[in-house]
Length: 246
Ligand SMILES: NC(=O)c1ccc[n+]([C@@H]2O[C@H](COP(=O)([O-])OP(=O)(O)OC[C@H]3O[C@@H](n4cnc5c(N)ncnc54)[C@H](OP(=O)(O)O)[C@@H]3O)[C@@H](O)[C@H]2O)c1
Image (cartoon, rainbow, N blue to C red):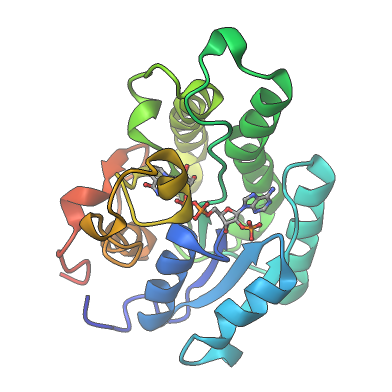
């Protein structure tokens, strides 16, 4: 999409933005004027990712493993040292867990890890940053869902169950925050060219898939201060090639 200033002055935290969909969305937000805070576990990866932005000084990063409540606390405290308000919160951190393992044999440790990172962490991060969202300008929270979050599929185990949970989390937060005009929506990215997709579909040619930047327009639209929808679950694929500025 053509860079615009439609996200000028918007402060955006994107969890899981050291690579993949989170990084692509962060780049496109930055090109459209936002100040972004990148997040992942590895500080050196985050530093390298940020160095490739056209105006790195406008942006920052926080390293925190959010697979524990303590790690969520680290992320929230570090974000609040950088900014006192939050306009856009995108929950992109996620893990697949062991692929193609039937529930009958699914290891409980993996179940707990996947459920925690994909479902409990976005609940806790939203809760911890709610005071900053309340100070935001037309605040927007964006969860990242999946097609297996509406229809369960054999071999997708805890990942599928966690995304059903994300759909529920989206609807409950949206309903509870409506009165405060904090918008909450979920995006199903559809198959996207990332490490996670390659792990799930090793036989697939990644070049047949849209890139994270290709699917970013719907995130930009939901991040805009003048978008009004809340409580929706939207398909990123429907927005590929569309201009969210119009
Ligand atoms: N790609 C697809 O086709 C597709 C389709 C549907 C839904 N999704 C969803 O889209 C989101 C992004 O997926 P992706 O494909 O971009 O995955 P990815 O390339 O594997 O990226 C995952 C991100 O999450 C971060 N992360 C992982 N574990 C973490 C932890 N414990 N604490 C903090 N950060 C952690 C990773 O950073 P570090 O490893 O550096 O910590 C990385 O930035 C996920 O929620 C996924 O379920 C993806």
